[in-house]
Length: 245
Image 1 (spheres, rainbow, N blue to C red):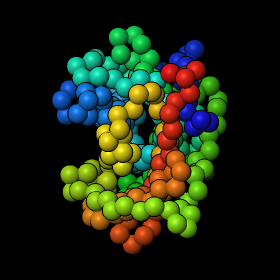
Image 2: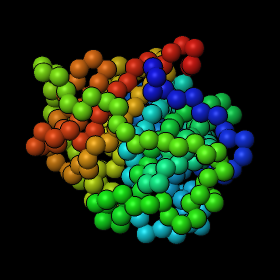
Image 3: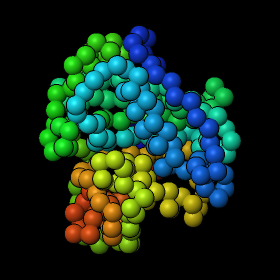
């Protein structure tokens, strides 16, 4: 599928390494690392890189889009490494690419678009001072767009099922953390453990609060709507091409 990325390390510039381990809280009943755990490791790598960069900014970063290609799922007790770097820049947002490896084997590729917002999260804010100096070399002048690509609304007759975001899903901003959205897809995978890799992409359209929600499905697409029926995120997924796995 077109949204399954293949990431290669840049020939120059900053590459940050985050190391972790798959533990009991990260896996499905079959011992496979869950999607929400994988996305959390990507988020941790991005956050630690930001802290270590020395860039001081008063803004906040939110994920607009994340494309994920899982070649194989990490397993319980495997040690993993996330290599992450800036792969594109625009005045108000930046692209971050990541490679997840276990024992030197690449198990997943990810490309995320992060938008830089005012501290209150209401409006975009220019990238912080010094960003280009630290992250520009790895981006190599590549410019990225923040336009969303998924159908914004489900078609008539889309199958619906109830969902609920818990208070435990909220982050420091008081909104559902981006990793928690992947539980919608993970809920389906647990019922029938995947035997191949997976290509998936999420687009975030609005912040969600704890409470009742719904998931509408049509083909490979999933629309996550809040209690008022407004779509807050869209997900699509399919088995990864055997040539990529």
